[in-house]
Length: 230
Image (cartoon, rainbow, N blue to C red; front, side, top):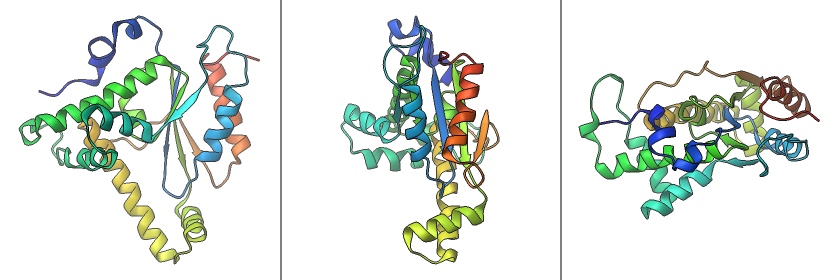
């Protein structure tokens, strides 16, 4: 029987964490060909130098591959095995059908472990999740902001062509393939469809500078009282 993500804060997270106010947490999904690192670095720099005024005392950090590595260590696997077995976990097109019998107990345990570790880290707060289905897994946390970094396809083709020294036609094929794989990976993780439009804020890397994007994100964080004021 599948577990609902909404059960995690009460059933699968240590009691002392469940008693605390969860978050704040930021999730960042990105289209392939958009470099998220400058945005993450500049945002972390701001968040770790501004006044918390009663917020969580520990520094902000970002998580991506770390969740896969922690899951692998707990289950005595290699991180790449975790990545690949998530893709094998998918239910196919009929999301409402009960097909859990298709999955081994080990794979179900792996999926639950990934989500448990993500929720535990999000409950602790002051974390930015990059990729890994963060928005879909952590949507229930009220103290959260879900971002999408994207850009028009020609811009992304140009970036990949320059950075990887490849033909534009090959770059386009790679972009479309990786975008699809990222969506499928998330759908397999959550056992449900991924809504590409279900973000709080979409940032266009082709028209906004890193400084401008950080300014917009910070403004929303302040408005939601997810961070203190300077």
